[in-house]
Amino acid sequence: MPKFLNKLAVQAVAIIVLGLILVGCTSAGAAPSVENAVQVIIPAAELTQTGNRIPFMLYDGPEPVRDAESVIIQLVDLTSNSEPQPLEWQAEADNYSDYAVPYWVIAPEFPTPGIWGLQATITLADGTVTTSDFVVDIKPEVDVVSIGEPAPLSQNRTLADVPDLATLTSDWEPQEALYLQTVADAIATGQPTVVSFATPAFCQTIFCAPVINTIKDAQTKLGADANFIHIEVFGNHADVEDFADLEFVPEMEEWGLRTEPWTFVIDGAGIVTHQLQGPVSLREIQLALESLQS
Image (cartoon, rainbow, N blue to C red; front, side):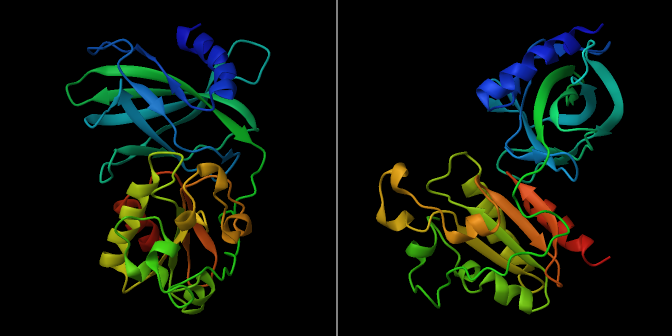
């Protein structure tokens, strides 16, 4: 039995304790290989059985890997009483390098909820091939608004309500166009709408500020064809200095959110078509909006 399968069984316990998917790797294949060279990090906390978009990043120690040529993911069954077994599902991950830290995306369909193993076969630009084993905790369901559901008609605060950008966002360089519409008003236009929940100054991960930068770029380039809205996660961010005193805006509960950042793409009829947890690049936003035109 391959060693990585035994290692995955141990990691299934580690993920619950750490709450972070971060593992070492072993060499694979006949090509040049480097042991323990690449780690996989998944910046997404709430994964369900179907309809998943799972983003992940590659790190070599503290530095992001920017020269990976390809990443192929194999699903591994950890749920049986026997030794872990590779399953038939396998796919090449999509790469989004037009982001502060390059990330990759897969969309597996898991047979059941629970702890599942994945193995990444990573080919670097110099021809080095290495494998990295990791696990995901798949929940039966989450409260987050799902693909195919109507988007909540949120009455989020705008500049018409609070004529002070510092009250509406913790972004250091806010873009006024992101705070002109409620979600309800945007959907009423019949155009696609992109709504991003993030808090650049108080983020619990490193991804909020880059996500908002993406949304600002997207609004600048695509604002004639779609509505773009940023909803600050904490409503009282401008008045507090202690994280413990921060309070979620009502829209967080309305959309079933407990973490950030989240970005939703909504079609002209008000239906959620894309649920983007964690990092999101301009190209991924463009592709999501282009898919609504077909």
